[in-house]
Image 1 (spheres, rainbow, N blue to C red):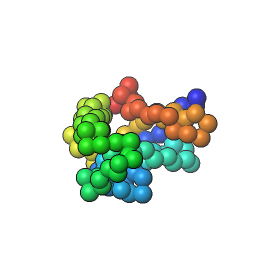
Image 2: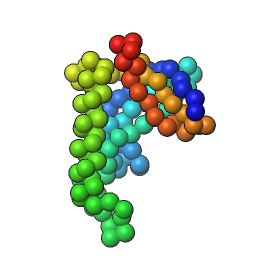
Image 3: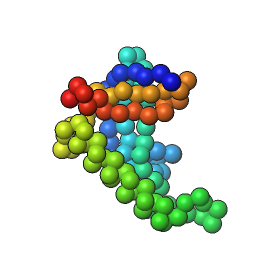
Image 4: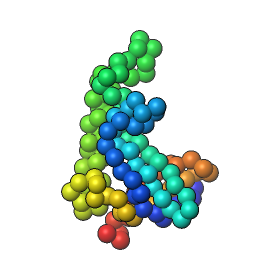
Length: 110
């Protein structure tokens, strides 16, 4: 595991994620000369699960609920009122090899 210090470079709420067909929170982090993105959300309501899908309406609702709670907690930690205010907020990004494993707002410097 490797931790890198950086900041939120971009943030948005709407369509994104896999093939821009998901709905939720898109983030891009910058650290030194590197960048990495993350997405929290689920399939948009215009997508319907097939009979072979590993999700259903209840799962989508649970993920939407978790996403909203995540955003609320993130705003509290950063002492902000709107996601647009999160640009340039300091973060710690954790990688395993080249894979983003987690990230957190650096509350200790806010």
